[in-house]
Image (cartoon, rainbow, N blue to C red; front, side):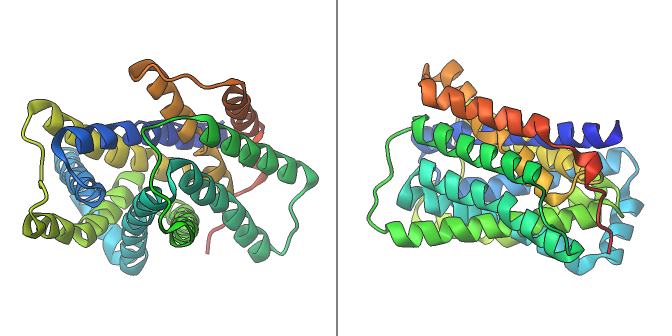
Length: 305
């Protein structure tokens, strides 16, 4: 039961992440905020929210103990998360949402599974291969058929694909590392430490925005509320759910489960923007859901170093 609950927590994180793209688009169109500026606010506000929660619930000693026990690992996790966001957003600007999503999110479960099998000196079963193939085909279908804004200019497609590959590799690496740490630490403390490290890394982008004349923050109540939502829901809560789920869910299964993210994004676009998926997109969503339902996390016990 705990393994299935962990998988549901990871899926919930993916659903929350799927709402972030639309929020980013709204902030860019309303206030002219750049992707890295929004990312910096997202992590900074998440760190503040987590810090307040830690103080209110008396977890300060737990956070300190977590950082003192695994200082390098939590900093690497937080910085890796920040780097993944940056690489992905820049890739989107160069090759568009569809290509960036397929390459980065599609590569992550392949790399995570390869790492886990190489460490355990095992081979994936035929069932594992079928589940992964179904998820990747579904991801390609739903990403290619979903329309989220105007297409990005393809002036530097090769660099964009390389950045998407880097994003996928970074995402896989931080998820596998998160699985190892989650089996030893308390999820809220781990999320707080990692988020604070990522916020420190991205904070200079706010200064860059100010120096370049780019808007640093939205001025309307709606824009401030959307920034708060990004920080609290799609960062603090989502990563808290991810790390809680990683206590019983290996990195390969987690990266596969978070492929519900484009489904969540497509559903939100249909509700808010009146966009519709065609038959191929619906088929892609069905394949992803079928693959996620077919994951058996109990068959893959956590790997603890």
